[in-house]
Every structure is written in C-alpha cells, then in structure tokens.
Length: 116
Image (cartoon, rainbow, N blue to C red; front, side, top):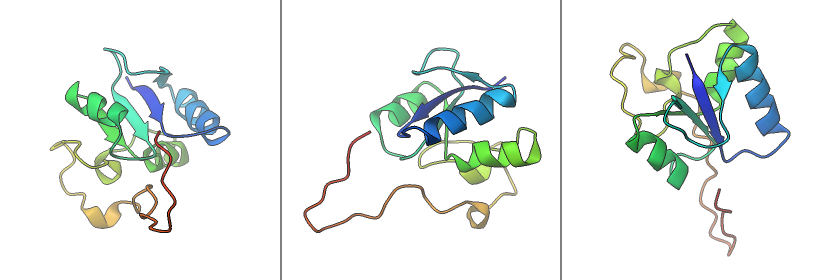
C-alpha cells in the first residue's frame, strides 16, 4: 500500500491532500519513516525529498494525488515524478504527460523563496 508524507504544503492545501490520499486508502505519516513509500512534494529539491529518494522513496507532485482522486484508483507515478526519482516501471509515459513543475520561477528582485 501507499504510505505518504507531505512536504512544502500549508493548510488548507496540506489537509486536502492528506484527506484525499487517506480516503483512497493511503496511510499518512508526518515525517519520513521506514515504511513510507511516497513523498508528495511542493518542491523537488528539499532535504526531505533528498532523504526520501536516498531511502528508496518515490517523490511526486501533488498532481499524482489529485489524479488518483479523480479516477478513484492508484495511477502510475511516472508523469508526476519530481526531479531525481528513478522509476523504470512507468514506461510509455513521456514528459509531455507531466504537469508543469510546482516550484516557482526564480525571482531576482531581492525576494528569496522561503525554504520548506
């Protein structure tokens, strides 16, 4: 089954993602544990994402949860993989099926992106 962790989301979005996943049968953990399988991440390059990948987890965008909810079943992670997640089990799905990255473009007007 799916045991997911969320990273980089604030409420109410965080609560909606968690509720959608749990309603589909996933288990939720507030932090990565040895039984965690998926990290749903707002940003691809965070310490939490790096750790999840290092421990064999799959790092996906929130689009994966929404698509699972829309179809009421678990869908392939392939189109929703974020940066650095290796999964050769999702052949036949190209990057054209992927949603745009969920990280903001760099802003060079003296503003810094808040770390997650």
